[in-house]
Amino acid sequence: MAGREDRAARIRGAALAAALTLALAAGIIRGFAGSRALFLRGLERFAPAERTGLPAAEYPGMAAHIADYLAGRKDDFQYTLALPGGGAAPCFHDYELAHMADCRGLIRLDGFVCLGSAALALVAAVLIRRRKDPFSETFRGARFALLGLGAAAAGLAAWAAADFDGLFVTFHRAAFTNDLWLLDPRTDLLIRLMPESLFTDLGILGLAAFTLGMGTFLSMLMLLRRRNQ
Image (cartoon, rainbow, N blue to C red; front, side, top):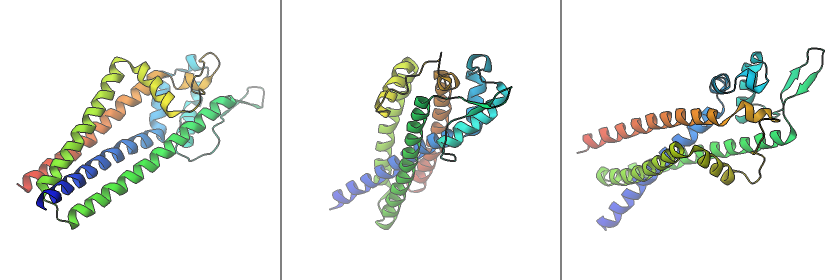
């Protein structure tokens, strides 16, 4: 009986750790997608006006436009430029608009994953407390989950460092059911505004934020372990 209870405690500990880790990762992605400051930084660093053809004065507006659309704060992704002689010109083709709609769908799904993971973590924490699981077994389960997820994250990081293009293409083929993401920088402003280097930079920032969050979580776990020894 004790063995079964210990095993259940380890499972609940693993579920808690895995859910918190997934909620953290999903929260970082959603937070980055809705950040005007991050997009403005990325546009200015990796998509200079002389390369995109978009006036530099439009960058703050474009950065806010992209972030607001992905975060669901606005519904239309088309961005219009005022022409010198009067009138306005649209910036994006229909297929670019369709691709961004797909991207926003992924960000919306990411939000559901974040909320669902947070809810699962809360349920696991409540069960651990109510069942008075022994901390040693809960800790073992959490450690096992964190080691597994850490190994997976390290594998992705190594893949990105060795062949970011391969990872980038694999992700897009898995995430999208069409080829609208295959844009041409000669004709499509969207890919000139958001080149691969911008996503590499966001990935590095995201990894740093994730590492910081996981470090905080692990530090709290180790502190609790010392108190319960």
